[in-house]
Image (cartoon, rainbow, N blue to C red; front, side, top):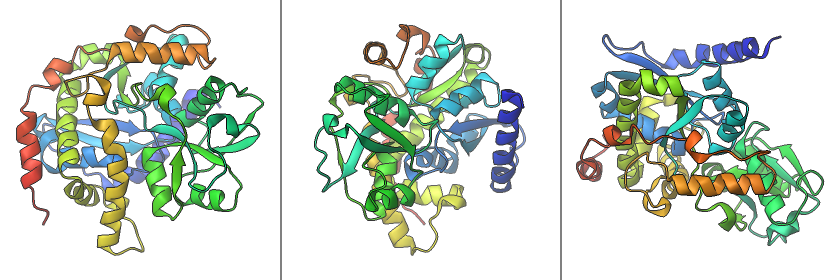
Length: 360
């Protein structure tokens, strides 16, 4: 079967399920489908969307936003390239790889300013350094995840051969990798902040190995075809403005954001737990993501802005350690042309509204 046809079928299956929980767009609103890049919509990913929807910020921009979880960052890039989605939220690595293949896609809004990805081991593991991973099995959420790329790059940067010295296997998400760690079927994980919080919620305390080689580099952002950024600038800027407000609110009042998540996307509410436990655990997940949402560590001042110098360093890092086969110009991967319009609001007023908000 042709790849594009296969992509279309997979997306159709996903949408047939998610449309059941998604109301039709209100009259006069433009429906936008946004792909997130993990199989589940966790608090760390979904809260910003939920807040923007609940507070009416998407509607104020004339938008009805449908959020669809996809399998990983690699597939998120593919689905934009094949025009299945207007925009998705992948990490930078598969975007750079696609650019080498001639795909004209750019990041127009950096959502996670620093990387949530890292290699983690159980807190009591004898593995102390990246070099100790030689001969070890590392679990990723799936083989389309950027965790594969990160594991290979960090292994190479520590002097290991990523082709022969480490073994990458699919460990899944949440409770599944926790069980694999307990049974010692995997020695380490190459996943990301919110997944690690879910694993700790499942009872496995984790320890992050050295992530200094990548700690300044930009992570996930919203991408679109270059032609879309030009032809639908108003929609993309309006989306980015509402999402930025949702991010500020989420940082200021994570508990309210989690409760909004349950209200807007009921399928995210955990089953088999009382509400207090569910909220407490999902706030833990969300707090794991919040450091990546903040602007200061990346040296930027505007929501969604990409630090081009940091991205250039990251591309050099990926090239040096063999993830990229040729140099990619950072300017080809990102644009800040919509950032001024996106930031046309009062962030302190949003933060105050969050602090004053009382969940009902």
